[in-house]
Length: 447
Image 1 (cartoon, rainbow, N blue to C red):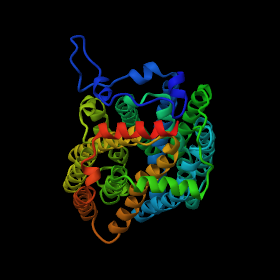
Image 2 (cartoon, rainbow, N blue to C red; image 1 turned 180 degrees about the horizontal axis):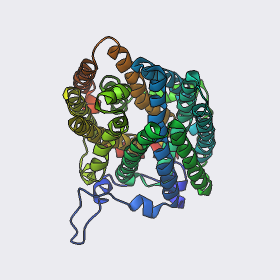
Image 3 (cartoon, helix red, strand yellow; image 1 turned 90 degrees about the vertical axis):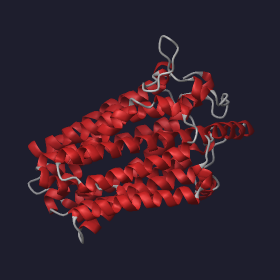
Image 4 (cartoon, one colour; image 1 turned 30 degrees about the vertical axis):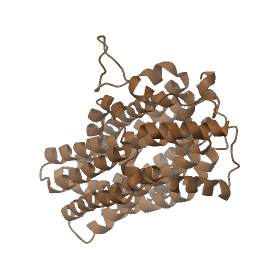
């Protein structure tokens, strides 16, 4: 980590034009719109270690992401029960998300990630033991889901707040694309392999592979240098949490990223229904249904060079969220597995675009002293939608058909996105160049 990026509040944001000029070029000097920029990995040793460790552990987590709800469905044969996993996860995230954000602004962020990573590994051991019982306990699955969600809520703010400290601000579009690419690989391979393992060998093996990935992640985190809190760090407490909430509320571009994503995921995420939908396509297809959105995300992640040339980040988020809803509507009407997978892939590509621009807004505008607390709010926003959305899907599916549940959710996603764009003009008209300048001014005042 060089001196410039290791001192909180000491590196000044460069000219916003650097966001464009940083694009990779080919031998003739032409900018490549459809390639990944590996500059952050080349220039930052700390980012390389973090990227490697999180890539491997996320792959394992995606296996558990499929195996745990699959096991719940096999024990209960109820989509409602699968949806209730989202409820217990939401409660845990809501309680611990603000705590994790406050701690991320006060403690060594790398240390926070290491501690929570080790605790998550212990949780995987519990899942393995339970899966090997003659009669696995349903309550243990729900308890583990809640604990995993709570630990994630403690970890993610520190993990997200690490990135602006170890890479340069003008490299955030490249970092967003690299993380999106990594996530897509894991979300394709993890669910696909996990689905095949749980159907063929049972969930214990999937949980065991997940456990092994934590070892690699912990080694990478240990090799990283310490990342001390900002010099002007606020002591964790209700006052510091309220300060973060007030800052988020004061900026429509931030509110828009939270609310648009929550709306899209609450109404338009049908993942709790995948185990039931897979029954009509053959049980092993459950892994492919979970993996299909990530296929679209992967394809889009290697075509993100154009994002450096887009400055209307808020509008881009809104358009992408609406496209997600339209793809989910089409998925609801798909009658063949291949067509359903294509629709989910299109949805995943749209979600990728939304996620990249949301990350750019967050990391290029929020001052370092508040980054952890705002990361806690981000975590609550992007976990609340899917968790409550899974519960909503499970509840609606208990009264209506699977198709009605999926299609109605997609329609409400599109309508809600349009209303939010109209109601938040600051989000709709947000310009990334102005955001960079505002962050520069705020960090200059903090010196």
